Length: 77
Image (cartoon, rainbow, N blue to C red; front, side, top):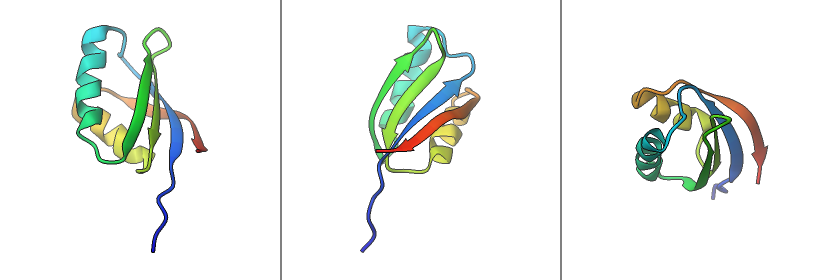
């Protein structure tokens, strides 16, 4: 039996600066299994995500919709 590990990650998302971009990102995040919660800091271009999947999956998903992203911080929940 494998245990699901929940993590809290902060991603720096290049180019994320307005509500329209936030809506596009939210739609993509909602399509991913393993995303529990997320919130945005548009001014700092940071996306805070609580998830049980690899951070690389989030980065790949953001790349698919045209955003470059990198992990700013990562911690177990």
